[in-house]
Image (cartoon, rainbow, N blue to C red):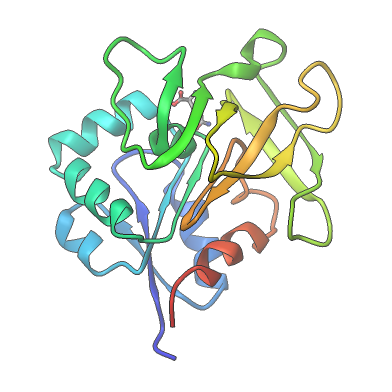
Length: 198
Ligand code: GLN
């Protein structure tokens, strides 16, 4: 099989960590700042960062529409934290006029854990993975509501936010509230790579 290329949206956010995990999986990992770079990608990661800034930069650099088109055409994509917000069709607690790429039929609440605790980590069970994932949450969103075709992959296990949805999949789109790129675990990225057709 030819080596697939996986892009990491690189206008803002924690790009390097994702590139490292992807490198470790044996795919060609590239930063994406231009539409021409996106064209080379078989799959994409939308990293954590600041979702409003990321959306604005994507528009400024003429990446918003090209990414939307690829998402609609079925490009496997993983959104983590701010990246999850960018994939969501609907946002609660966004800033006025906040744009998303959309494609994922969910409502995501921005900075959702902030009312309880800004940032925390813990091990959470993840559908399809044999052992829990060590999840790092930083001013993270959660999924408030899911559409019919959306599979829930993980929920917060305990504490005040117990039961909140923090990982989902809808066809070729994967999203996590947390940062799977930290903590030396490549299994969530492997799920993305496995979505790339041969
Ligand atoms: N709170 C950020 C946002 O709304 C996301 C935080 C993150 O990606 N770590 O964009």
